[in-house]
Length: 376
Ligand code: ADP
Ligand code: MG
Image 1 (tube, helix red, strand yellow):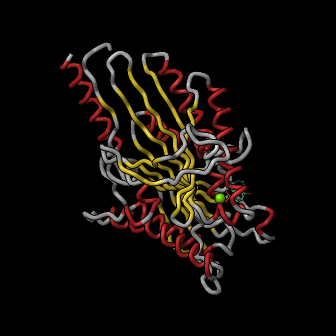
Image 2 (tube, helix red, strand yellow):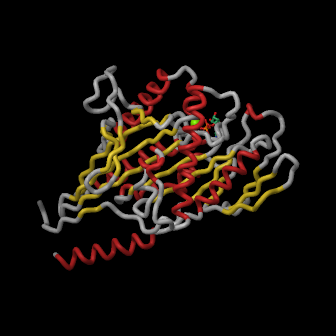
Image 3 (spheres, protein in one colour):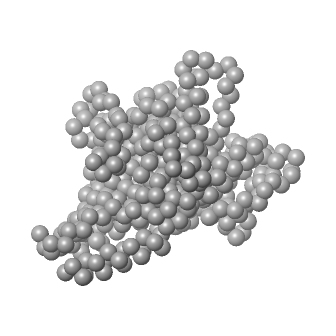
């Protein structure tokens, strides 16, 4: 029994070694849309190799040949994009703590990439990821694994956490006052948010699970819409984090896996006009700039191998610390608009992306507890 356990551990260790690597960076350029005006000369030229792109400024001068793990042309469909992240999503089910970000200026396609719309072709990464996990859990569930899956959805606005499922989870009265959310560390040093609602997602019946996810998304949209009249402005100024917690237990040998998938739609990265902003607006501008620059600082300090990484400087980085350290895995989408008017913002986003792609996270940790006592 012991030898078998050791072999299993070694096999697992080798697989983890294979999976180590940098933070991955994918760049997705959206197509031209009706609101973009008549000039459809693209400022972004995505190479057919799918790994590099060029950007042109207003005078038509090309700047930098950027290389990334993956570059999607405007014609890429939601399903093509998901194909490239499905293995990454899968690793949450294997017990890793993983995080996908979407970064870019407002209107560049972050929410389209993460959430998408409708029930068909236009569905984004969130519903596709949940669907994939439910399918696989269902198969494994028939082979001695028992799972429990729950979803949470929160927003970070001006460094305040807000539960978007406040009317759904366990123990929170519908219409009642939402308890204050705080980021805490558990005994193992893992971060979690206390008082955050967790909605159980059925994993034995995919249709039921997907219906529950739809209810989760609808509840989140409702919480957002009652909070502010200008919903678009609000969502472009806050980060939203969709979380899926996956807990699995092997009924035969007692092995426990505890994986987490975080899907994070970041606030618009555009430089907001500071002039004229006062009061709440000014505070807001500063908070957004601060938390995105804190994310940049964390990446820079990881890239330089610094012994102190400033995770605690913003709620976002503190919350996602497990994914942004050697312990986890991260993948960043940089979303670009193809318009010439956006080329300066696009260039800023690409420079940020270049910094991120130089980050080495080291060896990720699989959150697995082995119990070798045989059948329980
Ligand atoms: P962001 O979240 O970055 O502000 P959105 O995802 O809301 O941007 O995208 C802005 C608009 O462009 C939306 O109407 C969205 O449906 C559309 N859009 C974005 N990306 C694509 C795409 N790849 N294909 C078609 N429409 C897109
Ligand atoms: Mg958005």
